[in-house]
Image 1 (tube, rainbow, N blue to C red):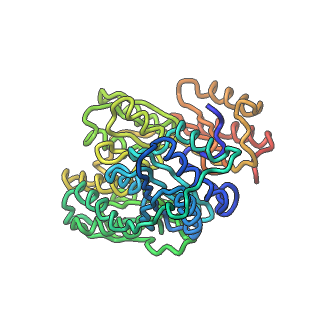
Image 2: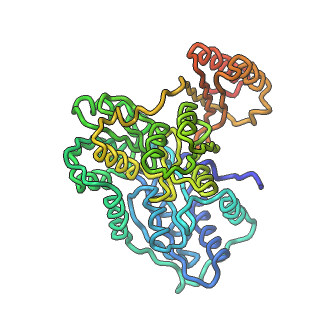
Image 3: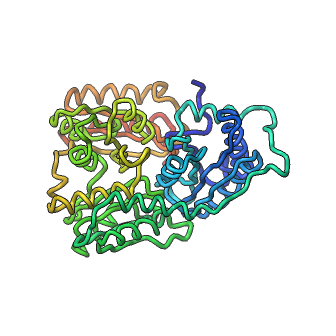
Length: 447
């Protein structure tokens, strides 16, 4: 398959108003998406559902996208500010042609991105992404429709009621539970509090005043320390931290202990997995893998990205899958990660069992794990970095069968991520030092 120019591990991502997220390029993406639909599904009507998170730049991106789509004769249902999983839900449950979410997920406010969903509500596969790129970068002018055939924009906020109803029906009555929620000043700042309050929980919400610039800033799923402190202050039963587009959820127990995606996957596999295989990524802790296998269930790993997880789940018939970062997929409910649904299922399990949350998630001991992110000036292939290859080989020799090393570039940021996992923390520090030093010697690390 031809190397993609725009798409990373989760759609198209970059700094807003810089290539590829300039108005001209985004409009071309919209035109190309309309042409893609007409080529793939000829002789039909086309309706695309679109939503955005709370970034200041999202209005610019949305406007350019919609204008491109309308010029090809495609209608748009615009949801306004909403979550990424709600777009997937709308496409699948309202028989729409495509879904597009404008969001850079957990990234800072200066970033933005575009995520595409096919008519099944699934994130575009690599093949679908490559097909769309071929249209975007073709050398001919793309066809537009006559003036009387351009598409129209419809207010889709009423559609969101069906998604909210689905969430409410996915949980149990939560009266008696005290719950703290960090909405990251992001897309779920209205939906999450409404859903939990409708189910009777006593809810304390934080970071629900987005100003376009404060999304994910010192809060949300990438900063669970914030909600952990609030849980302890409130003496709450559980806390949840969502990210900017609410497709991730990190939980906190009543003691302030952080419960990451691996522990959530393990818990969900017990209560909702139906004894079927479980899918995680190469980043997931070895403790999770050992636990799933000890329960006589098959365990599979994929590359990073909830799309990769979802595709493997479909292949092996899994009900539960996800990432350590908090993307959790419950196939009975959604085709993609949904942070609010994850939080609801966790709260419902807590309510039904009557256990404390710390007791509920005491499933397995995690191997010590260290993750270092280095900002890089360019993403040279790892195999072409002689010092790094040598360092990784040296590290693997030191660890032998007592741990593992994973080195990969971020698909959404100019960073290289180095993960070392082992039974012995001293081994982790030694190996990490060797690999980091090797990257510094390559001259691509920005200080």
